[in-house]
Image 1 (cartoon, rainbow, N blue to C red):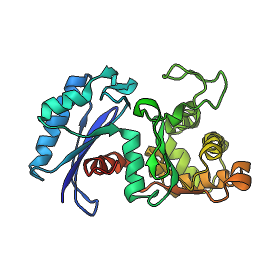
Image 2: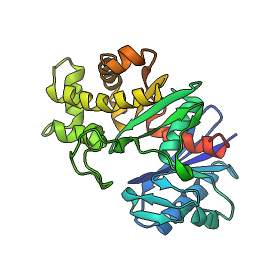
Image 3: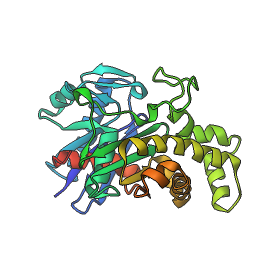
Image 4: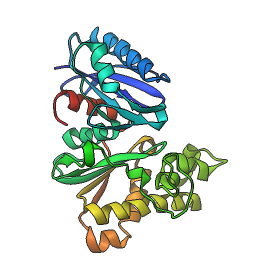
Length: 287
């Protein structure tokens, strides 16, 4: 069976035709437009193109932003506030199209098919422009009031710290997202820094960054007592050095030694395809 997964992000919209073995055999990627209607139009256009490779295939959509039970999305990175995107998508396609927050889709991709498969309690962290992801509790994605998902990256780790786009100060992602590492590493690029660390060079910047990541993970461990923490997002593409550094730091904390010695820190499986694979799970009715 072929399924079309759509991943709507802050800068790019990606589609993939996915086969039963989770192989993405047709891909498309285009810039994300600046208005809700233009985004919907582009998604419709890209899915029509994908249907040429998989006629009539079901469609699921992973979409950045916070979704409410009425199908409206608020997404700062897309310039959307309570935009009725679900209704607009259904009108464009003439059928009901399942759509879900991108972090939830990535979480469920890992839980259904990847690094969190079989876990009762697990966490996905995506280290990219911000910090995304989500929490699995009793085998289901944890949701709050009105079905809203939690924003892990906006946990406060520094009182009265750096201003964040969410309106708070001191959010975790201001210190531990891949973007924060890029600022800390300047004038080197993030890649240059990671390459030096991989080659065995000691780096105070790298150690400080890993410390910032670990500060947030400790709190998540103490709250959720997870079996597994999967590390994904753009930074994870740098390879095992990222996950091994985080794992080593986490295993030196009291949160791990005293309370959660069972927690495993592992790489996420799907990385850049997490949104597409999660959208496939959504289309299959597995979210």
